[in-house]
Image (cartoon, rainbow, N blue to C red):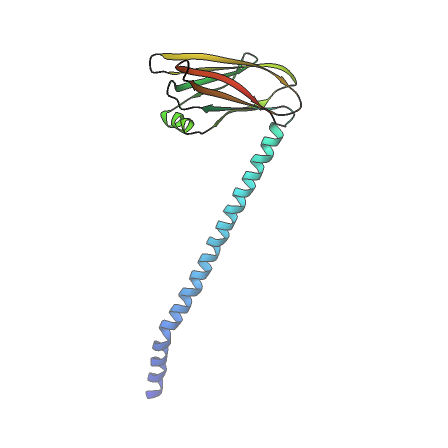
Length: 177
């Protein structure tokens, strides 16, 4: 009777080790799919980024591309509410601005307002700015005639405070590529 009792005692002593071993094995097997899922997520994100870059290159080739950005100066004389952008008298972009967005522009941020395609030749770009000043509300416009060639065109809609005139100045600047 002592012999079977010894076997039971050994079995009871080894039981916690067996349970610990099974737990560690099941945990490593459970972690392995999690690692695979994370790796798969990273691969999908990388592939998505590459597809977006390829899509932009196909939709907006450099030979026809035009990009328009918005920037602001200190903003003492003007608080931006909205911008409308027209190319050849057709509305191509409009934006209503929140206080958070205008504060970001005041701090030096630049917003991409429009990316599109233009045929080669002469085009008229018009921007209409709506906002509030310290004394009155503003609704102003700026216009620029551009000559589109095979190179991409980058335009900046600039809102700059003029301390000499004590009012905002609205302009469209073409950047050289």
